[in-house]
Image (tube, rainbow, N blue to C red; front, side):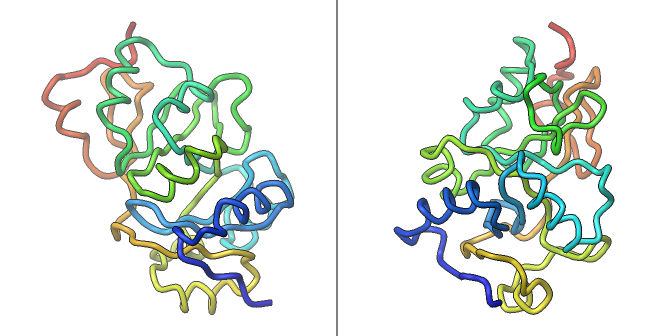
Length: 205
């Protein structure tokens, strides 16, 4: 079955995203970094499908993708200092590791920590923020291989994906910043200038 392919700003997209989240469909979506693949973070069937597609370890958590910075505290516990730091970083090309709330989806939590992205992309700012729904996401690639950016190649590699939303992407993965460390540290990429310059100790209140 060939995936449904639409531009992210097609007027049919909001309804299609809701359908995907409510019926267990897999969704490829653009971000400010790379394309992501995911869906409903509480739907075990779609979580398992994405793991199978990528050859991904079942113990490895996914990342929550949110439409706005205001949504972060629905899933993460922030100190006052962390709150200021998070607002200085997102929307932006960062995955933030934060203390998880008890009702955060387990698919995005490991050892009490949740990984959260708020992409600086109109798909999230205009559509996901309006819907008020999170997506789980991971890069579109077989495990261990570079992320795919060409839609035709994505279809060739993953023909069983249900929906592909096309749009501009930045081209490189997000930096991963552990905000639970004191001071914060870069797990992948580099520490953001505003954290490195300030010596921000975001793990403290």
